[in-house]
Amino acid sequence: MISIGLSDITESDLLALIADGVSEGRSVDYKRELPKGNDEGKKEFLADVSSFANTAGGDLILGIEEEKGLPTNIVGVETADMDLELRRLDSMLASGISPRIKYELRAIPLKNGNEAVIVRIQRSWLGPHRVVFKGHDKFYGRNSAGKYPLDVTELRTAFNLSGTVNERIRAFRTDRIIALMNNETPIPFTDTPKAVLHCIPVESFTGQPLFDVLPLYENPQSLPVIASTIWERRLNLDGLMSYKYGSPCSAYTQLYRSGVIEAVSGEIVAKTYREWTVIPSLAFERYILQFLPTCIRILQRIGATAPVLIGLTLTKTRGLSMGTSALEFGMSYPIAQNSVILPEALVEDLSMPIAKILRPIFDLVWNACGYPRSENFDSEDNWIAR
Image (cartoon, rainbow, N blue to C red; front, side, top):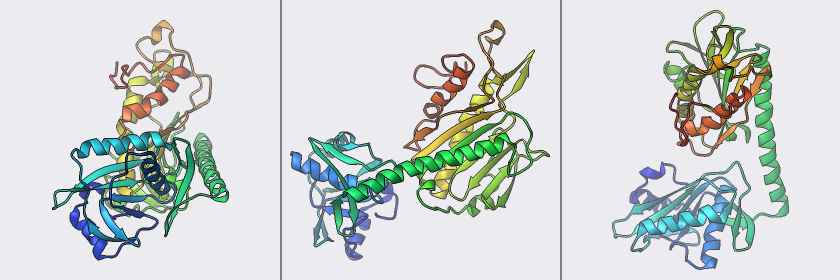
């Protein structure tokens, strides 16, 4: 893979592949032409792309001549309508690989008037992915020699890895929730109902990634806490923590060296309203909606990538009702559970609208109080704060 952002690649970067003798292999492949429109051409293209997703990701570069795997000339591809060709490739990838993969397409203008096309494929943690075009039901991986069909043993390993990753993520989150319910926190914390937001990159549990947290430590504003404008920070064994000043503390954010973010607030879940203790629906949702983009930016800054699991948990919830204007008319019911552990939302694209990510999660909180859905969203998943 070319080690710069796809949007920044120019013809000079492609020429450098020739000058440096970057051969085809695990993370790069060259093709002289765009995939042909016949079945064989489509299958070959889908096999190439899926092999990257099933291995380590990489760049498939179209419009480069090669000899014995080494790039020799950048000729580009000739087409009357490049936008139409990119849509054709996008359509093939959307329907021909299962489950779907994460990729980007870009055409690079060349001095000769043609364009090279790069398909940048991210390594997938949700595979293995197979080609499902017209009965070509196969899985592919990559090594230094290029793509190859995965054998039974490799497929078993890939499926087991996918299941193991899910189990490890669930175990981590469960362990943290139990600790927080027992008020076992990295800093003395108020014994109040808590909102616990977890942002968990899947890659954090596929190996042992260690991200550098020192740049964020050196910038005091880079790791905030929920619903606060002033906080302290400190390094700890797990990584970096910011916390709201006070004894005991009422909010903190822990950035683990693995890339996991755990943000906890003891101030936004429960408020007293007349004779009820309620979830302040507007403030609660607003604070989470405002904070999740910060978490996404932190992940991007340290170099963590999608997919990311977003999990929300509320503790000490038994007896809480949803605070709305309709509360006094008896439309809200108290939560029966001592904790509300909501299913994770899978975010495969970090540019996905925040409200769209969180709405299904918020709906479940309202379900726990007897409502069919959050009243603060419109039919198009826009948060409108009724």
